[in-house]
Amino acid sequence: MATCRACGADITFLLTLRDRPTPVDAEPVKRYIVQHRDGRVVGILVDTFTPHWATCTDPDRFRKKESA
Image 1 (spheres, helix red, strand yellow):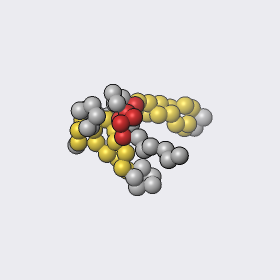
Image 2 (cartoon, one colour):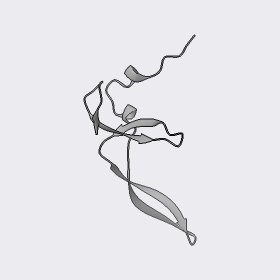
Image 3 (tube, rainbow, N blue to C red):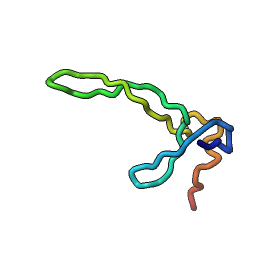
Image 4 (tube, rainbow, N blue to C red):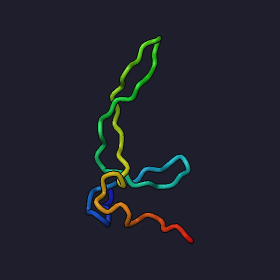
């Protein structure tokens, strides 16, 4: 568990498929994912994590600056 230096929210870090850490909100959110089974559409309730930049009050503070 960590704290966002911009807004003070509780965050944690998950690894991306490229093994890079990315900050996410600490509390998971329940959402449905859709699967197709035997010709039917089935919703499965799972815990997901929201990328912290989507809820942070100052998300631009840590964005990498583009070089000219």
